[in-house]
Amino acid sequence: MEIQLVLTVIFVVVSATVAADYVRPLPRKALQFPWDLKPASYPQQVHISLAGDKHMRVTWITDDDSSPSIVEYGTIPGRYDNLAEGESNSYSYLLYSSGKIHHTVIGPLEDNTVYFYRCGGEGPEFQLKTPPAQLPITFAVAGDLGQTGWTKSTLDHIGQCKYDVHLLPGDLSYADYIQHRWDTFGKLVEPLASTRPWMVTQGNHEKESIPLIKDGFESYNARWKMPFEESGSSSNLYYSFEVAGAHFIMLGSYADYDKYSDQYRWLKMDLSKVDRKRTPWLIVLFHVPWYNSNKAHQGEGSDMMEVMEPLLYAANVDLVLAGHVHAYERSKRVHNGRSDPCGAVHITIGDGGNREGLASRYINPQPEWSAFREASFGHGELKIVNSTHAFWSWHRNDDDEPVKSDDIWITSLVNSGCVEQKRHELRNLHMIP
Image (cartoon, rainbow, N blue to C red; front, side, top):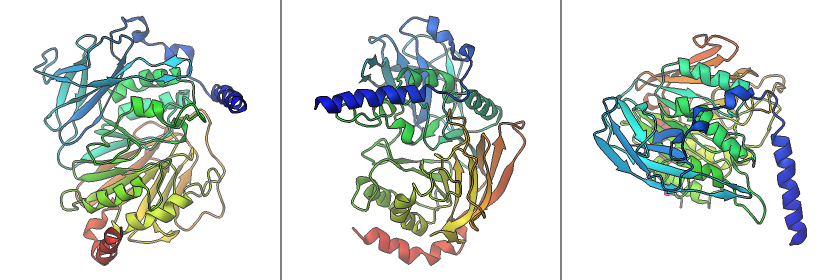
């Protein structure tokens, strides 16, 4: 037991040392925030997320344990006609103790409307915009963010585009056991994350487990609560949500996913409830890509793909977004390792700006299913125009935001012959216990 404890301490120290080795850190000035000079009761690290139909979850942190978990909000600046009270939690991690983490759900809210809100009964006024109820709708997509100069460039580019929801397929802060980096990350993304909902799933850098001392994902779960309960999931690591005409499924690459797991059973249940007449688009996010021609992280998603790809294929998933590999790649419609007109388009977008740098080595020749690949930092934009067509574009940080480095029109499978072709297959999968 004593040997195990010593090894654990060494493991944490080494991990912290490695994590401190930023490739391109933010300048010191970029990590100084007005909140550092404010009273302990002032809200900080404010971010929002969707929380069921016409509701939004507001999350923030205070250093004052007595600060109330209330949000005042309304459609006129400085005038708050509504008030909601939520819950709070905190956690300790070795010598670190978090502030009071508040989660308050507000609503029902009008669609496509700007609201002004205040957290905890004091502090600055924030504003958010709710997504539209109907198509069109636009999503910003960036994974593997971290806290570097590249990250700031990615966020600056995203801030210039007009979007309704931010999608993040894992690896947020790159805190890697150094807990105050969760705080600096929350402050870094607050200008964007407090104005549009951020829908995230976990990556390997969120795990932060310590043998015999800490289970995984404690910090992530405490700080970034997603609508898992609202979608019938038992874990914050996998959930679903609907917005406008799209059903999104956020899976956990680091939660159990075998056929006897809770995640697999939940996925089957969630897919069985999808109504393609109401949500003609079906989109899935997870961290570790299944289709990857980069030499980095080769084969890491194979086991999950073997178990879950048959479900996604039978359900006619249109698009899969992943991260993990620090580069960009877009596939053709693909299934079982080959191009398939009834398969999903897979996009790896783990190029948000992490400290580990880019993954620039690819397997050659380029696989037949791979349509475009490049090792550059950037972000993606997905505009779902109507029930049949969506426009995907990828934007390098090295270019001006309006410049599209890769783009494609995607046609939903809902109006193809694929749905009818696989109807029997889908029914059989749902019937198997």
